Image 1 (cartoon, rainbow, N blue to C red):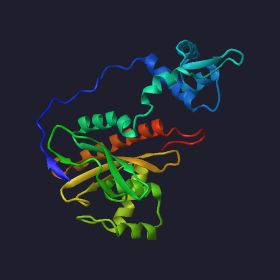
Image 2: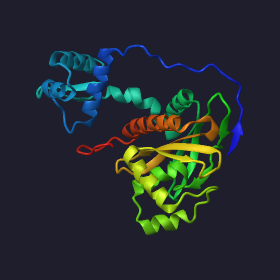
Image 3: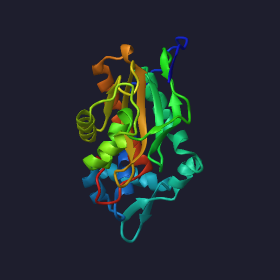
Image 4: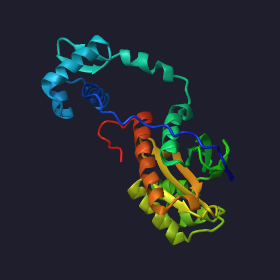
Length: 270
C-alpha cells in the first residue's frame, strides 16, 4: 500500500430533500411482496406494511397498471409482476463489483477515506475487485491485491462469521504477516465484537500508520462473500471517526446483502 495526494475537488453532496411518501410506500409494498411466501390481498399487505388499506389499494392498482404487480381477479390477491424484469434487465450480465461501485463512491465521498471492495475467495484469501478514492491524500490499494482472509479489519469480520474453533483460528493466524501483530486473545475478542457490531477496526496492526475499518457482505447462510473496507492514514482519522465509518459500512453491507442475497422466507438478516 502507498500514499497518494490528489488535487482538492468539490465534494458531492447528497440531496437532503424530503422523501416522496407515495414512492416510499410503493417501494415498501414491493419489498413486502418480494419476501412474501404467497400472493396476498390488500388487507394483509396493509397490515404487514402499516400503510392504510385505501392507500395500499391505490398503490397496488397503479403498480398493476404498470405491470409491476400482478392481480389475481378470482382470489383478489397480488404478487410481483413481470414488469419488474424489464427494470432489472439492465443488471443482467453486470458484475457484483459494477453493481456495488456506486455505494463505494458514496461512502468514500461522505467519509473522505479510501473504500475498497474485497471478494472472499475459495482459497481463504480476499482480493480487491473495486476501489473508490477520496479527493484528499490517501492510501493507495491496487485492484487485484490479495491478502489472507483473516488479516486486518476484514479478517476480524470474517473470523467472527466463521466462528472457527480456537485451535484452528490460532493455526491460521500463524500464517498471517503483520507489521505489529495483535495478541491471539485480542484478535479473538475483536472478532467476537465484530460479529456483534457488524464491523471491525484495525489500527496500526497490519501496517503501521494505516487504519482499516470493514464490514462483511453475507449470503443466505450468513457467510461472508465480500467485504467493504475503509482504509486511511492513521494520523488523519480519530477513533471516533473510524467508528462512524464502521457504522456506515455496516449499514451499506446490510443493504447490499439483502439486495444480492435475499433471505429465504422465515430467515432474518442480522
